[in-house]
Image (tube, rainbow, N blue to C red; front, side, top):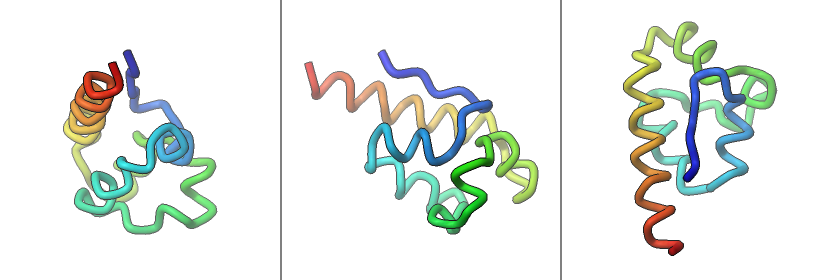
Length: 72
């Protein structure tokens, strides 16, 4: 089972599954291709953008739970 944590780098999550792109975009993280995405953790990005990190991580984990189910 895939588990996303707030200390993961954004680019790492994007590389795990491109289906996460809309989740980041819908939550206000629009600069996924910028240099910060390749070195910034989810938690750091949320702090900079004033976002609820736990809610974003929960949404990402729900996505991966569904993706894992369909891959079985």
